[in-house]
Amino acid sequence: MEMRQMLAKTLAEIMEKNDKIVVIDADLSKPNGTSVLYSKFPDRCFNVGIAEQNMMGIAAGIASYGYIPVVVTFTPFATRRPCDQLTVSVAYAKQNVKIIGTDPGLTAELNGGTHMSVEDVGIARSIPEILIYDAVDPLQLGQALPQIIDYEGAAYVRMPRKYAESVLDENYKFDLFKADILREGEDITVFATSIMVKESLVAAEILAQEGIDVEVVNVHTFKPLDEETIINSLKKTKKAIVCENHNIIGGLFSAISELVVQKYPVPIRPLGIKDRFGQVGKLPELMKEYEMTADDVVKLVKSMF
Image (cartoon, rainbow, N blue to C red; front, top):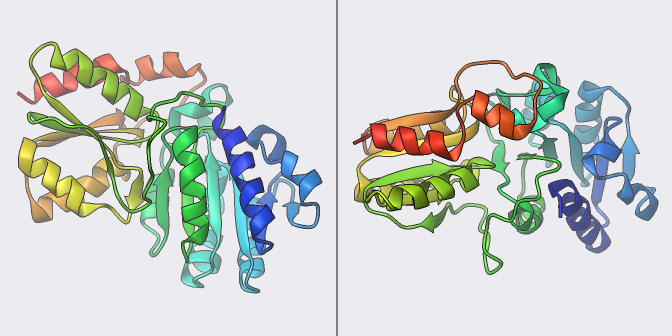
């Protein structure tokens, strides 16, 4: 099941139980998978057209009447374009709006550089009081969405539309505020999120064959950070790399570095988009171009010893 299919399925289940949930799109309901909701909930789904700033303002207004708007659009149109409305109308006004940004980073693929948001987390992190969650796979997304809807306050979700990899075990249980230790190790910690979790797990198995014991931690919620899990892992391994589908400036590496420098200084290095714009390409090609494959994780880990 693709991420967008899980998004629609889970939202439908939530909307059946809670008539306060409304979905707002900006002419992208079909590519984002939410078009199926319009026939089921015609009075609670709205297409505002290509007007994302207006969409965010509408969402804030609807939220002020006690509803819970779920705004769904491509990542750059969820953060970069409506930044003022997101800041003032939603966050400052303390409105309970959920923003779903699809195809973050390299997962925008053939839509190219203008639609390939490498800065969305940096924007959202700098706005006070917004929760930020980055989905790993459809299983996790399906468990995360109900918790995010129940969370009182603005929340930003980033998820690839078409990603259908099963990364997590079927017995996995999600906690919005707890990072997941997916593989225990003693020598180095790899903090990973989104599509980089699979690459990190593959890299850990390769490194194990060479005698390097890697701990892999999925930090799915960037804000607030699960400081306890992060620091406890670092106390054990004493060094780390951070793998993310985002600019290495402003994203998960920045968030963890800000924590580490204050509470437990250890060597830490980034693996992500190195302050570059995006470009057209298929995901495997782009991951090679931006040096974000499992082999690149292996190379960076080895450089830490």
